[in-house]
Length: 171
Ligand code: FES
Image 1: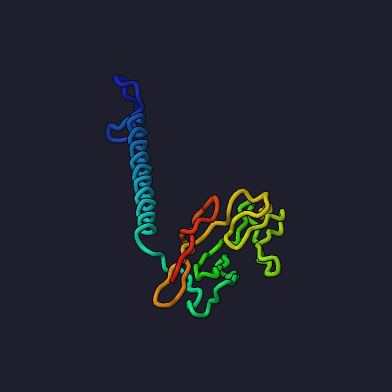
Image 2 (image 1 turned 90 degrees about the horizontal axis):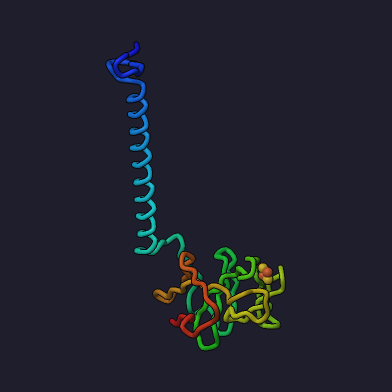
């Protein structure tokens, strides 16, 4: 049917084609808006959960304190880190990802340094760069000592320029 006064096609019960499409666009806008609000809330909520509580899936038990000798370096491959216990008893959990392009470093016991197989960057046991192209020290993870057990929180990775004494954790 055609409404000559308004010069628009009436498709049903007085609804013109223009108003019909206008309503569809409004509903699509409402749906898109609700999806946006829902996604924003879920993003904010998941962020709060990570910050406010400890994600137990990310905390890995390494072992008992007394079993970890001072002056030693232990690979913990499944956790993607090296655990270093300094001679004074301090702990450092080093990411094994080279800070150049992310290859996995290896500990060389004889030379007491980490070596990257990709472009030969070298790091000392504190994670500091001995030779480039690695641009900065190895990242570290938070070390947790609870009831005589040593744990590492893989959810808390810290980037750093170079080693500082405060990077060490003591039992
Ligand atoms: S990725 Fe390690 S030196 Fe390039």
